[in-house]
Structure formats: structure tokens, C-alpha cells
Length: 265
Ligand SMILES: NC(=O)c1ccc[n+]([C@@H]2O[C@H](COP(=O)([O-])OP(=O)(O)OC[C@H]3O[C@@H](n4cnc5c(N)ncnc54)[C@H](OP(=O)(O)O)[C@@H]3O)[C@@H](O)[C@H]2O)c1
Image (cartoon, rainbow, N blue to C red; front, side):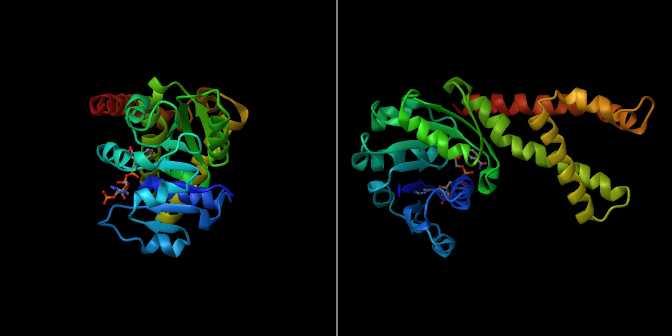
């Protein structure tokens, strides 16, 4: 059985670990997660995985290494582990937004198969949208990594230059979508539902709407047309939302996040 090291057991590192265990892709004994020395390891040990503050020890025998730390922490950590990495035996996977192949290769070398992934936190329940690219895309190693993430939701192979856009649409997108859902639930409470009922209704409606597009390959507007009876309440509500800038606010928010991503780079 292959071994996995996740450097940085934070929000996304832990989400990946949970998804991987849920999907049965690795055994707990073969997963090692590291955290900064200031952080507790108790919850990791309770999960049954290996936990340590020692990044070098964690990556020594790993087949896959996932770097899941903040961009400002990444280069220092890379430099601290580079001497024990082995390009012939290991595959390096980075979740770090904005950290490009050139920067990673400058530390660990161009021979390493490096896969950049941009998942979202729904990877914890195997429902991620994971965009990915590889510095050696025609290798069996890349197929191997894609195979893992295919089991943790959906994957889309993209060019590296699209990774910032993927960060916004696929990763930040979870928060954007959830904020809409919270607003819809708040509306639901005002028109008479208990909070828990409103949340349940909104959640299943969102799941159903997404499934209509994913399963039938329809354009959203084709499905909207089926709901909007002439002079009916749906079109009245929808137009009221648009008069208040719904589509414009969403587009502006996405473009704003993207321009902020470009500044970080
Ligand atoms: N969150 C998401 O949904 C998401 C999705 C896709 C991509 N990403 C990207 O993934 C990266 C991590 O994001 P995140 O949200 O998971 O951040 P996070 O919650 O801050 O997790 C990073 C973790 O790495 C730890 N760490 C810091 N220095 C370390 C060291 N020397 N050795 C081992 N661990 C160390 C941090 O500890 P301290 O807190 O003590 O520093 C923290 O627990 C970012 O680049 C982000 O852009 C995030």
C-alpha cells in the first residue's frame, strides 16, 4: 500500500485527509499529517493517522507528498525537506495557491513530477471540484494522481496559467455558493420556516439545481425558463433580485477575487 504525507493539517489539508480516508484510498497507518510546532496533534492521533511536527520525517518514506500550507510558509518548508526528497520514487502535489511550477522546481528540481491541485473543502465528503495541472502531464504518475482525485469528486485538467482562476471559481466558489444559500435560508425564515427547515429546503434545492446541470448538461437559463410562468411569482422574484444586482454582484465578486489573487502573485 502506498504512503501519503500531508504537510499542513489545516482547513484543506484535513479536508483532503478526511476524503481520502472516506474513499478508502489509503489506510490510516499509511497517512502522516504534519502541523506547525505551535499546533496540537491530538485530533489527528484520535483520527488514527500518524501525526508529527517533523516534516522531514513525514516525507522520508512517503510515495505522495501533499503541500497544504499558506503561500508565505511554502518556500521555507520546501527548502527544509528538499534534501530528503526523491524524484524517482515520489510525486509532489501542491495545493498552495499562487505557488507555480517554476518556484517549486527551483527548490526540488525539474525531474520531479509535480502536480498542482485546486480542490475545495467538499473534498472531505468526496464532492470536490478539483482543477489540476502537471509539469510532466504525459506521465503515468500524473494519471495516478488524477485517479486519486477522480475518486474525491470531479477533476478538470487545466493549463497552469488558469490555476488562479480555478482558485476563485472552484475553491473560493464554495464560500460564494454557501453565502447565497445562507441568504436564501434567511429569506425562508422571514416567510415562515424554522431555521433548520429553511436550511434543509435550500440545501436540497441547490443540490437538485446543480444536478440538473451536471446530469442533463443543460444551460441554467433553459432550466430557469421551465420555472418562470409568464407573470408568475418566480419571474417577479427573480427580476427583483436582478434589479438589486444579483448577477452583477456575483460576477463582480469573482472578478475582484481574481484580481486580488493576481496581486498575491
Ligand atoms: N481552504 C481552502 O478551501 C483551500 C482550497 C484550495 C486551496 N487552498 C490553499 O491551500 C493552502 C492552505 O490553506 P488552508 O486554508 O488549509 O490554510 P490553513 O488552515 O492555515 O492551513 C495551513 C496549515 O499549515 C500549518 N503549518 C504552518 N507551518 C507549518 C510547518 N512548518 N509544518 C507543517 N505545517 C505547518 C499551519 O499552522 P499555523 O496555523 O500554526 O501556521 C496550518 O495549520 C493555501 O495556500 C490555500 O490557498 C485552500
